[in-house]
Amino acid sequence: MGLFSAIGGALSSFCSAVGSICSTVGGAIAAGIGALATAIAPYLGPVATIVSAIANILGIFKENERPEDLGQAMEQMDKKPEDFDSINEYIDYLREGIRSGEVKLNDNLSDIQKAAYTATGAALGIKAIDEKYQLQTSDEFWGQMGKKFEEGKITPIEITKILETSSKNSVSAENVTNYINGDKMTDGQKASGVSDAIEGGLKAANPNMSDEEITSRFNKLIE
Image 1 (cartoon, rainbow, N blue to C red):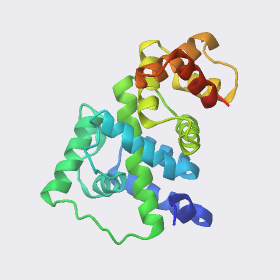
Image 2: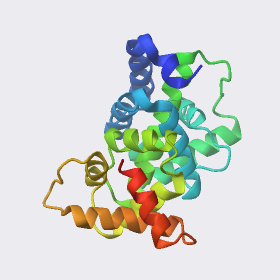
Image 3: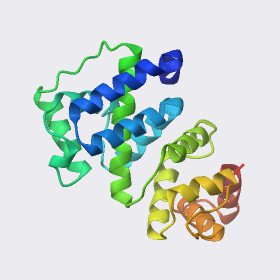
Image 4: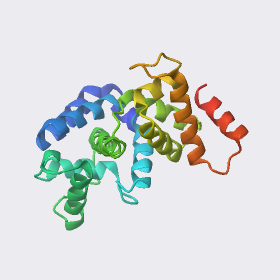
């Protein structure tokens, strides 16, 4: 059963489970993680996949590290994100709790529990990615990226490079989403600057592609 199918008509149970995890952790950052985890529920499967891949590329998650395990660690460990200088340090703390056995991972979770822990761990990964690039991504951004990923129009490394070029050129993730959706830009940013950041990210991710191939990739992305 897919993660979204698991949530399905039990959305209130899913939201309650996420809320319980994050209230156990405590603090404003965990509350924000909980809100994001709930918001990405409709696209949880692809979003969890691409966030895990991007976090792995950036060294935020380790190989074969599962968001659901980090979600369980958040609930069981005593410290909260505010106790650390960065989200990365907090993730290292959770990882050590898992490694040492202090965190007791449950592999026999119900579908709702698994979805809640996965969403919470994925949202934690998103916060670390935001911190890395000094961007403020949203559930709309990740939902759009998840949809395009499912359609075969973008890869995790391409998303990573688009975030990188956006950060370097002061292009907001919101406007990346707006551009792909054909919506108006916000905060005075020009559409041409946003398109340059997207195309630059595609080029950086695919150095062996010709200009024509990059243009084709770009056009498919914004279809």
